[in-house]
Every structure is written in C-alpha cells, then in structure tokens.
Amino acid sequence: MKMLHPDTPWIGNEEVAEDELVVATTRDELALLANSICEALEAVEEWEFDTRLGVLPDQARMLRDRINDVLRSAVRPE
Image 1 (cartoon, rainbow, N blue to C red):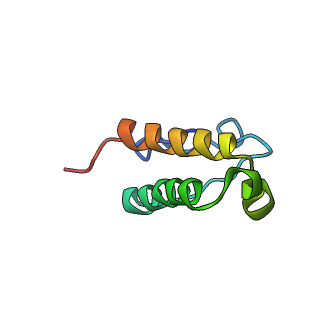
Image 2 (image 1 turned 30 degrees about the vertical axis):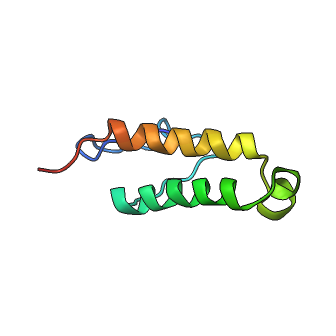
C-alpha cells in the first residue's frame, strides 16, 4: 500500500505495480475499513480467521496498521 498524492500528477505505470490497484477513497471510508478489520479480529476466533476471511490474523493486523499509517500521514483538507 502506498499513497499517491492528489497534488502530484499521476504519471502511470511507474507508481503502480502489476499486482496493485488504485482506489480513490475518502478518509472516512478508509477509517471504516481499518475499524472493520479491528472488529473482525475481535469477533472471529483465531483458529477460524483464515477460513472465514481468507487471510491470517497477522496479515489482517498488518493491513490495519498500514491503513492507520496512511491515515496519520495523509494531509487533512483545511
């Protein structure tokens, strides 16, 4: 996951790897995703997490942490 800043023109393939997607989202939507991951980590037992969600709990934690890092580093509009 990486942040493509809106004030920099998107040049193309150099910013996006073959296995990546570009998604435009609001801060609130991204926070909802991070919070949903937290809820899933609390609600689903660790032994069945991979079966039900398709990733290991540690992978979900890493994604949640990366999303939170992006939210902390993103400049809030004034």
